[in-house]
Image (cartoon, rainbow, N blue to C red; front, top):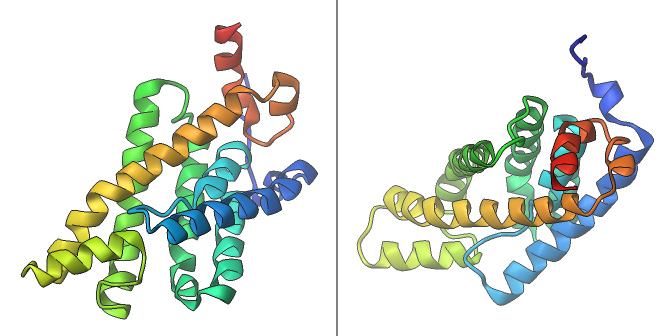
Length: 204
């Protein structure tokens, strides 16, 4: 069987383009909820991950970038984190292309990879640009650790190491639950949707 070829152009189908604003809206709502409640997580990449899972890395990257551009209008801090959300979309999309969401242990590994990439990419921004505190729920915990005498880098990685993994687990679980209720005839219309069809057939 000939291996399926992917490209930036083929990723941006009409359905994929329509999914982008939905993903941005989901990110916005999740991020606002986390911000208002001062939760020790972000919840602003759920739409990015969902778009990347179904449509590939480039659609995920655009969803992530547009999210931070939109939220940055209200909170300029988010402009600095545009690269982090773009990277989240790219990494998730490339993992999806490689079939890293075909079995439970690969899901777990992918979530850990996603968390690690997010922590590493955001660390210089949080520590060097904002001094470890951005006003988010996790930053409040980081600030408390710094006040207790912890080194700024140790405080950041100690906090983010726990809560970023939790954030990615929650985000992936939400995406997985939504994907489970999408009919196979609809799922196959997305650029990478066919990768999940065998899981559909196993549950019937």
